[in-house]
Image 1 (cartoon, protein in one colour):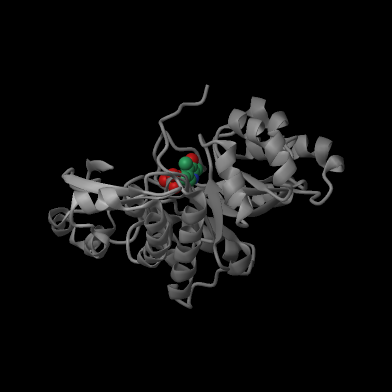
Image 2: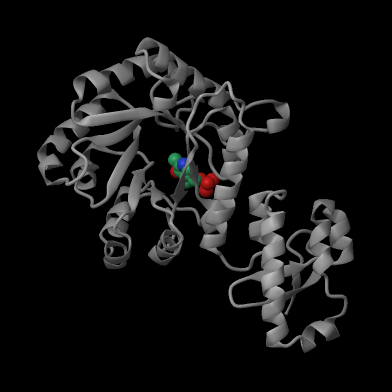
Length: 337
Ligand SMILES: *Cc1c(COP(=O)(O)O)cnc(C)c1O
């Protein structure tokens, strides 16, 4: 029952309930982290009291605390909330992300004409059971970025049985030798990472062969990936080429339905220095595409924003956010075989 405080490493105590562990910060730790002061409302002052808390009281407390936490999560960074939770609660994470999306969408300037953002829950490296949890409360869009892992999950017996309307988004680097595998996947919804004409052409050819077996969509949904940060290790076409790649896909790839643009961008932007330059760059590509092809801006999707910055991305015009760790918890590092 005793532990070190997640925030300041000092001693603190916890109450363990069925699926939520709440850290009761000491007064000192609450002072160190004054934005969590409200958490100390729930502080239980002495260890003796805590030890004598009965299961019934625990569960009563649990309900109260859970409601309080839900209210708090609007004002506290999501990853910090995750840190006071001992276990990953995917349903909670998804509800919290959706609440933040609603809030950011409501605040977005009316000059930005864009639909309400779609939440793609990025489940890479996470077990199928957590996907089932998310699906059970209505989440339908899930993102994966390793082909092999997506193949396994999309064919998983539990997923096939319980998640009939799941929509898989592939968000990783697609090598040409994996194309045939990916186009055959059940419930593949979109490839977000078409980064050059060659890949588009190969996907177009591969879809030609399988499309007769696809009940609902005769076309494969794609986004074109833009390397807005210009980093060598990131895929994506140069922003100056975005219009050309978009033209290629829409004019030369009849089996693809190009929904818009996507970027990953440089990690760790410091928002105190101003808006994220990657988001600015991607919105420019979006504007270029809309004006060149006379498209209604609301019809061209913009996929940008991850756990740390999806709120800022939405404020700038994102229509698809890809959120992983703040829903599913931190990931162990993994490299694709
Ligand atoms: C992993 C991943 C995400 C999610 O990242 P988090 O920071 O965990 O939210 C989003 N987009 C892509 C392309 C990813 O690979």
